[in-house]
Image 1 (tube, rainbow, N blue to C red):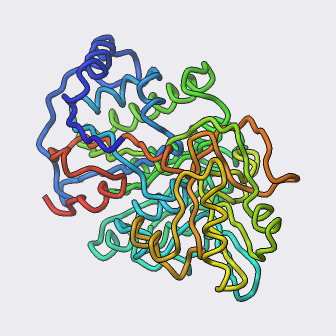
Image 2 (image 1 turned 180 degrees about the vertical axis):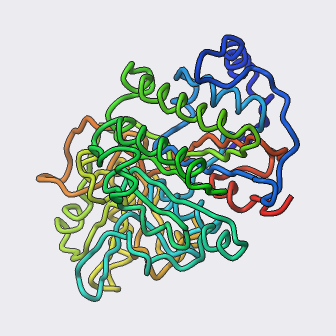
Length: 406
């Protein structure tokens, strides 16, 4: 998972991809690998950032995506890592700002205010403490757009000339792309890619950021034909965008990957059973309950009494299924998290384990989810401008290494 490779590093995978590309069909990229000289902004440079939600390397390897695999082979590829916790808000914030959570301040999908004893979704602009790529683009007089499948990510669009979501589109964009889409569907992601094409074309945007939703990955493993149909269609839409703009640069990654989960633990009940008052917050918690039932592979624990930290730590360290456990300062240092926005204790689960609120302390489940170290592997694809693949170890590196000027 920590290995970083150039496009030549995975010989069998790239060989299969290149072979599939020799039979390019209608709407797909031409098979030639030659690339024109990269354009400057003044010459009409076009840049597309894509975060495919839940798109682990296993989905890439097992899906019919000839356009993306052609870009992978012609450009640079790295199998890198997401930021921990491996959840949507944290990782999209990292890519949009080019910083880690200790700087941008987004440490989960959900924020718990221990003073008030209440929580809120971490999806308001005031939570974001660093400037976005759109604010930088505006400073440089570069026209930009942010388009997302999930409405919850709209807080990351600060500074964009255009910002919209497939879940709740503005009337003018809905009149062109179509009405709002069901967030629990594949169609919502197709809408988002079509909107990105519109922004790059008719709206004349030079930089566009796209974020999809991972309902299909939560629901279907990579070998399922419904997952493969979803990703094949996304690939066709991506191919249309690249055909529209032969000089386009594409920087594509995922916010996290996905794992099958079978064992759920209610950490709050574990603490309650030993008389330790506190709040256990699954970091994945958001509005999209059908995706994951608010069960994820990481958890913050907020204790009512500071004196309970040692006893709670010792108790939770012995819970079967807890793979890693950290005190606040250690977690902040290890994963570059902002200590003021995390719990007293940070837990990461084993691959089949999720944390959340349950009727019992422990239950068997059958879901696909993320949040832990086991959903950290992500593909990183850079196409359209020569780059050194060894510089791309994490998804956030797409923004950290982005060259604004030729």
